[in-house]
Image (cartoon, rainbow, N blue to C red; front, side):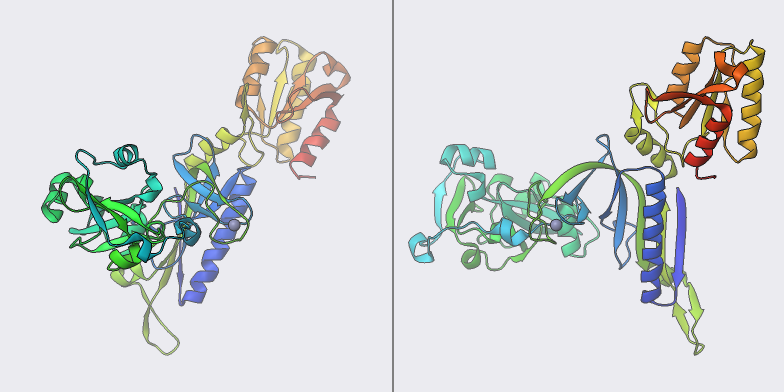
Length: 419
Ligand SMILES: [Zn+2]
């Protein structure tokens, strides 16, 4: 890891430090030749009062999922991502309270899952209210969501400003509600209830009756579950409407986290007594930011994004050497002389050069050169006596030209911006 910290006297200063660092990280990852996104993230255990962004290299092997808008700049880690909940939550319908009547209890033996309810009642998951009991800082909390949606634990945890959250085990559910997991529902439940917009927007729904082998139908959220606190507790899905713009929808990518910037605020400086004296001589707490880059992860991400069947294709800024010099025969005096000359001359100009002076067949050397993937390969062969070499860039396989050695040097210096 590369770690950095900023210490400011006020929040405006932290904002400046944070965005300076954010821009610097953008440039660093850009120069690394990386396809990446800066995404809104959760501060997690590191915490802090301000914002936080993760820098994610896009790669199918990535362990994280990120949601990005198809139209605007919005991008967020899946656990943090929002969508236009109001749109998702609303199930249109025309039935009124009068049409629906009161909640109706009905017998549902051996039906404990959403799938079983769907199958036996011939209803869709979206017509069912799913209730999950969580243990939040040691206390039970019921979270209600539409049956075709998934609860995002992190959003529940953040909503309650809690330290710990986990799904209650079946014994705990039985102890708190008096019934088995499959028959718990929000109607008449004597526990704190949180309800996702997707459930709150239902015209009516089916839910467990808190009585073994029974469910309720015709539950109207605003009437029957009015004790619930409504919020965004849902994991977004691909295709959801973007929370920031009118036209976009969310698309998912896999990513590797290569950097993270945090506004820590006073979380640590307060605890550790990191203070300064202000202009009036008063003791004040420093406002902190923290910034990290995963150095070794950059390498794996960059190689994941920059390779072909033959090996690595190093971006210039990260290549271990810029130029790979390959004399075809180390026994040929003219070839070795020109190779030595180029080796010294390029190094004098600030170019990093690898000279393959092994006594190997040309094919072996070429294969290794492709595998290692340095940006420029110079082959010194039969034309060496006339000062001619073969110039090839790794990024464009097949595109090789025979030119004079001094021309090759000129092209290399151009490519590296040294001329
Ligand atoms: Zn958008």
